[in-house]
Length: 173
Ligand code: HEC
Ligand code: HEC
Ligand code: HEC
Ligand code: HEC
Ligand code: HEC
Picture 1: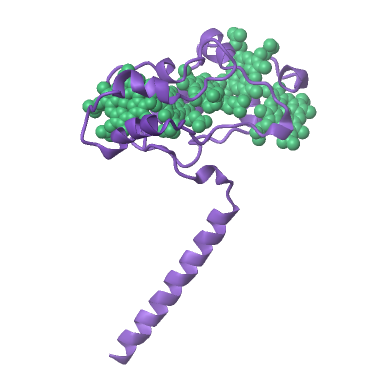
Picture 2 (picture 1 turned 30 degrees about the horizontal axis):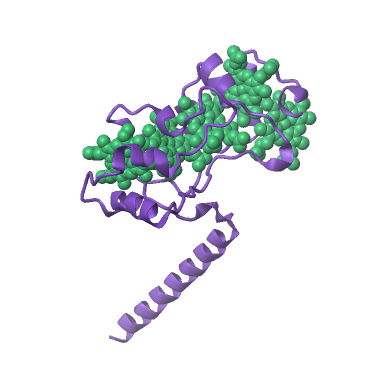
């Protein structure tokens, strides 16, 4: 009996410690770990054969891929399509006239002033999205952080392999 109480107390002490540590760790992370406005499911869309560029519209033509606006979702979801409350949210946003504000996950440090172009890599380099972004297409819920970390080595290693320029000015302008 006595030892049972002791064990419970010790356990809750450990639990408190674990909670404190995770709050501290999470507290250090940037706000990016926040929730997305809708629990978007990549797999449900990509497995139906939808092209990435339906939602990431400029990925083949411009530097930025861009994230979809509510208008893009409404092309298919203006009428109810499922019993999923996350899907109903699309029409609630529309009713309120509110824009979708997706949290960005993949971003280069602004201090580095590095130039990156999707068009260059996707259209000319013919590099698959997953090479840089990991298995985004298989996600059933939005990740809370990037599946692949971008640092300078990530860029330079591939450039060395593919015999592309590694001169500082190629990327830092
Ligand atoms: C060679 C690596 C690479 C490839 C290939 C690549 N990306 Fe990216 N992607 C990046 C980098 C780097 C960033 C961050 C760019 C920045 O912060 O300026 C990014 C950012 C993004 C973003 C968010 C910011 C934005 O540009 O609007 C989306 C969405 C995205 N990529 C989608 C895709 C899709 C879809 C594909 C395939 C069709 C793809 N990417 C292929 C490296 C890549
Ligand atoms: C080109 C058509 C099309 C567009 C554009 C589209 N969807 Fe869908 N969406 C579908 C289809 C088809 C399904 C049903 C998939 C299934 O049956 O599994 C679906 C299902 C869903 C579901 C339910 C998924 C689940 O897990 O059951 C949600 C939530 C959703 N879409 C959100 C969005 C959002 C948010 C956008 C805009 C960013 C969007 N969709 C854009 C076609 C589309
Ligand atoms: C029907 C719309 C839709 C399609 C099709 C789609 N995406 Fe997305 N994508 C989204 C939405 C919405 C988000 C933001 C929420 C999330 O992360 O799930 C997103 C986020 C991303 C991001 C993270 C961008 C960032 O920095 O925040 C990447 C990378 C990405 N998608 C890659 C892909 C790839 C690769 C494909 C094709 C295989 C694809 N997406 C197809 C709607 C779509
Ligand atoms: C998986 C391989 C790969 C990765 C990762 C990669 N690149 Fe590249 N990059 C290429 C290839 C291949 C080309 C040449 C494409 C072409 O044919 O035009 C290229 C071209 C470029 C160019 C044009 C170079 C020139 O001489 O004009 C820039 C700038 C660049 N990449 C920046 C980046 C940055 C910044 C990153 C990291 C965020 C990055 N790349 C990550 C493969 C990669
Ligand atoms: C292929 C592209 C590429 C090349 C070539 C390259 N860099 Fe970078 N560099 C980057 C990217 C992208 C980042 C930012 C990574 C991140 O977001 O953490 C970076 C970050 C840096 C940083 C850190 C800046 C900061 O405050 O975050 C320094 C310093 C730097 N690079 C110097 C150099 C020098 C010097 C060279 C030449 C010897 C060089 N880079 C060549 C892409 C490149």
